[in-house]
Length: 171
Image 1 (spheres, rainbow, N blue to C red):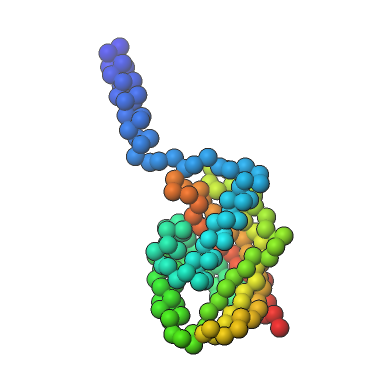
Image 2 (image 1 turned 180 degrees about the vertical axis):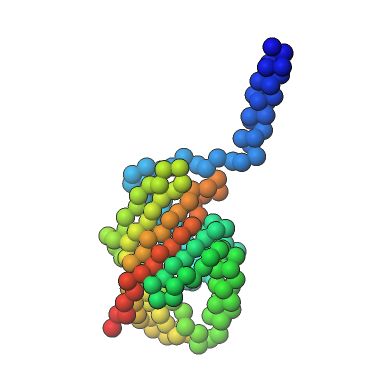
């Protein structure tokens, strides 16, 4: 009996310690709140990625096992570290006065968000891509469809998977 009581006491006392070592993810938003949370994180990520050139912030927005698949480029990323290293190099190249710069825009009305119970959310939509050389005029150059998987972690939403496909040039 004493042994059972001692085991129970250890389990009860260790429970809160174990729970503190791995913080729980925030509660999953539902319905329109989930869509708005993903829309906001999507906008933040692509603003940083295309115009912010902030490798540390991009890395903080990705899961360590981040993967990206592209219908023209194949497997673009197998982990966040490699993806961010490539991104950091492209940021350096964009510092040249006549470098090409890009911008991504979500197509209004195309966004769909669905929950993934116990994990996060699917995001699906269409996006447009713009380019400009140096400080020159911006031009619409392409469009594509995408599906992204977001993970809700203790520190917020992190991008885990990207599937970008059906790329087309726009004339």
